[in-house]
Image (cartoon, rainbow, N blue to C red; front, side, top):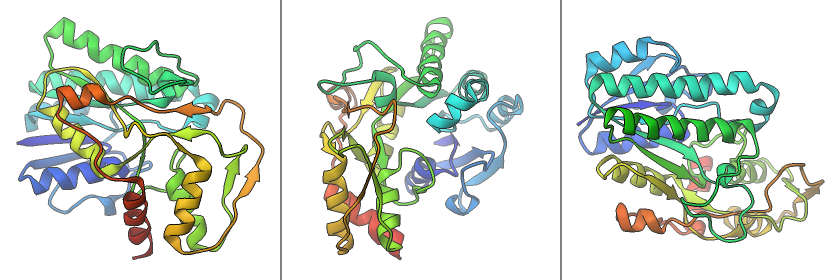
Length: 301
């Protein structure tokens, strides 16, 4: 199989590239390296330094003729989306259209990574795909718009494209400087002997899913009928519980620094991934303790 991975120099994308290569695929990466790293890309994959908003991505896809395009490139920082909503929409919406057109021109299906918690908003129970979206940031709105374009392309052009809404992904290569990487932030602070901030009382809950499990879901979606799938563990873990697990894993006795609650932070965000279990044969298999340990070992190696 030949695959094109946008954002393949980033955290999740580079793990996906490695998995595709291990399966014997011919892998091409599109990344402008704004947040991704060339060092993340295996030398067995070909890196094309290109912005997804550039119309040249369609020319590249026509030349390469991939069977599948995995679209992970995005403007993924919520704060940036609030401060620069036009830029956020340019990358996440215009870029999405470019990628969809590239996939259509090449006769490839597109697998798009969207966001779970940010789209569903506050969750009193694990969110399902048919729940009403309540985006709370321009970032979430732009991702939801991307999903809409993908569904429209399926109807208009008979496409076989799919969307995977991801929970809080963590694992090796996640940068502690990027928003959402709370596991990476906690472990990085502990390694360097600093206190980590816990905003509010730490009782807010999230759904943490290991990057290797996410990669498995994306690969499964590439071979399944078009659809919209939640990708998460379905397990609610409080931020304080996560911090204690990170402390235990690192073997470092350290209390967090409790900082004021941030305006707009969700209290509870967990995904119901039962549809992915039924349609994709996928479930998150990595327990949080094991995933955190693997992340810590990678950070310290």
